[in-house]
Figure 1 (cartoon, rainbow, N blue to C red):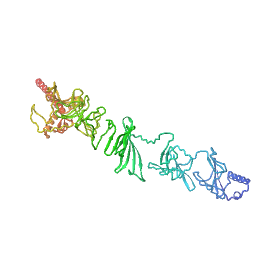
Figure 2: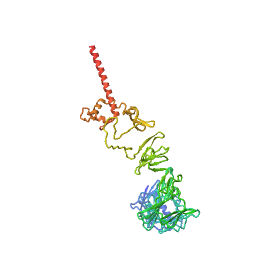
Figure 3: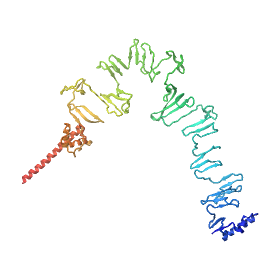
Length: 602
């Protein structure tokens, strides 16, 4: 039921607009209004002050309608979507509550103005919390709280990240602060940084009164990384000027362990230069530059400080210079090195490896250099050598001579070192035989290259003929040699343990024609006779022959590659051609026999 009340109706209108002096008159007024609503007599003229729809579930006013007092008729506005707008303050009694039908005390306001929420405060994403004149102090979005001002509070506990805008800081003031930058660094400004102390007196100070040692550690999981500690002088220094550098190098070695070198470098005329290194393996101290001491100063050890005394142009050694005193490097002297007459130089195990007589003759007890040449190893010079080099490797079976080059790194280290390109060695441990191995890496296509240059070529064709490159083979016979037999192997080509070619003692050449590798039947489907005829004319240089249509097939089958031909495949082709001719002859014989029988029968 919908009814309309006209405020100009004299009896009821005058009663609503009149001053009501007491509560009794208020009840009477409400009673009259309710009777008018229920009887349908409220508002029967065209002048409508407000409209009330009475339905089964309650009453409502029109979309955008207002509720108010006589003085402020639009104190409350209700929009079509249900939003309620208050034109003036909303005042509830001291200690009173605001809530829902199921939670009456969701909000309580004390007499002092404190607001207490008994449930969560939920805001739409991106909405703001602020004060008059600064509405966006807090911005709430999914998973983030953005603070636009300064936070002044006690202890802050967070279960997530604490993010600052680039260049903002944490501190007690703008002068003493920790500043964060998106470029990847954190700055401590206007204050000393202390570890283990609350009163640091230096820019960086570490203190631990409870221990005898204090460690400052840098850690990098990359075993090949460097750790640098730089000391800069001056302001705005961005290069190596006015710098000293301590660098720790880590080298990953076999077994996952780590050997670190600590390097001290200083600025010199051409840049940072290493001056000293503490070797991670063994603790050796390595000086990369000159060591300069005041004249007369000493070098020694605990208990013997004056082992070495340095004065102008003179080094005085107070003790014995043993073989182990100088090791692992080269000793270079710009002056003379003098030992006593008949004195010796050697190693810990061989003190007299070098002996120098009073007349200056030098005797090497291990490497002999004399009128016959040079001898290496515990042996006498080769008796059949007038002048040359003799090397005795004892009972060792590895390389007796290795040829290396620093610009080679072939990587075949299971055989030789990566910079070794050739070795000489025994073929058999106790039988001997000379083996020469040439190694090439990268894109190198030649392991061994032999070039023979003759003064003049021999053109004779006889048993006395010589070639620019000649191979002469013999067999041991007592203390001398004998010629090979006609069936003895004189020259063999091998690869991977297989033997594809053999040259016999009578000069006959054998090639491996084992057909188990896939060659069997290769030409069964071919016209072997035509292919053989095409090969014949190609090898004589006639390319306009009648069989030239078969020339491309020769290349496809690998029988010929350009002007070259395969001996094995050519032999197989020729045998196939003979076989095909035999088949044709047999077929002709059968046809002839058939014709003869037919003639006889007629």
